[in-house]
Image (cartoon, rainbow, N blue to C red; front, side, top):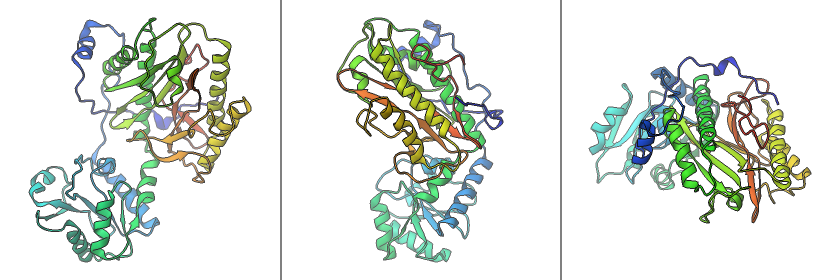
Length: 420
């Protein structure tokens, strides 16, 4: 299976905001009560710079023009963090920028939040405020008029809540455009630095799983295995983890409230991740505690073959839906079909600052892959009452194929991390 590391992934400097709280138990283990043999992976990693955010906004303005949008409103969400490095909790009060083709963004802000906004809004951006008894939607309308924006070319971003978009429409007395594609296509194609963050995040998670698997014991609970995986992430400098499922519970793609502790011969399925500078990993590994039986090998090999076939089919210009078709055919040909009968979900999702984000590798999606797009590649077979198998690695589309982020690819059922 082709998997060449490219120069564009050899980024000289990554960084992470890995602050946060961990439980006292995990803290004591990380501080030395348990020797993991792991080291901090993010020392010396460089953060995003102001120029990175400037380039993102430039790309967004170009994208807006391509979709014939002159003004775009977004609010507190990952998009606000992505374009402006601003975290703002969502409430019923309207806050956010009107990004426009005429001048720097104009921010709409509750009057009593002005000083907090000034701490975060980039220098040179105008902030307009509305008092508690006033309408933020009327302020948006007046701002649009002042900017000289064509009222037929105003859009709301993909995460703007419906009551806000409806309020803007009532104030303008006309429908506004859906700006989802203009925003999503910017975030879908990652820069070299962003790819570097994701490459590191995925490798950290795979190392954490490998450490967790070294601690397996008969009778172990899923919480105990999850704790070891969290400890490993922490030792490597990030907050992260993995949700394990044993035996028949692995047949539930996103888990079940039913409990099973670890038994000899159980399938173990672990799905989780972490983030580096806000960019996510998403990794699933499936192994067997003990000697795999014939049935487990058969299912595992079908899933692994499907993942490899999808990987080999990826290249710029191929439709997202075609990659799903390639993987699904392998599983159907192995007798685990038709359609979604056992491979119960799409092949993959876009990933970046959100674990699941646009676009998706799903049947009939005509969107063409572009270099720099990132997805999960995660075929699975789920047989209720028996077990489930999923193998998941994230990848970046390259100029002539794809690169599996973080390396450490599954070789077989006994070797979930290859020889990397």
